[in-house]
Length: 188
Image (cartoon, rainbow, N blue to C red; front, side, top):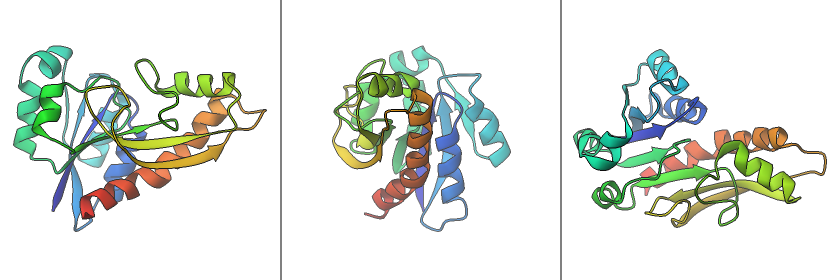
């Protein structure tokens, strides 16, 4: 049985989708969710779904081995960032080479980097009059949104689309593709 640990910072819709997708599967399951936000809605979702969840602060994540030790004890086969907003420390990445992935709400390399997340990405896409956007699932390295691309899915952006319309389209792509890509990675 493959073990998945999810990192999330906010509402946790992607985390919930992954938990439900892998619930009662024989090949993998989500064993834990970690968050940097003690008030994140993802904690409530985990409680409802009976999945272990912990919150941590910046010091535990970047300056000590606290989060690293939690991960080592969990023995994940894959660490999935699902709306996690902090840059991953290099010392944790070194312990889990090619085992940390992220979903980004744009077609990288466009609209990536520090500060480019959520509605900020969609506002930039609309402001630049892009005709398409999408999601990128990629490996995480020591730089924001620069790891090797695993998968991309596209959607159209219409002249009348607002950032909120684009966000809804991106959310649909995430819900459809993210669990399948995670499943495929764990099957390789």
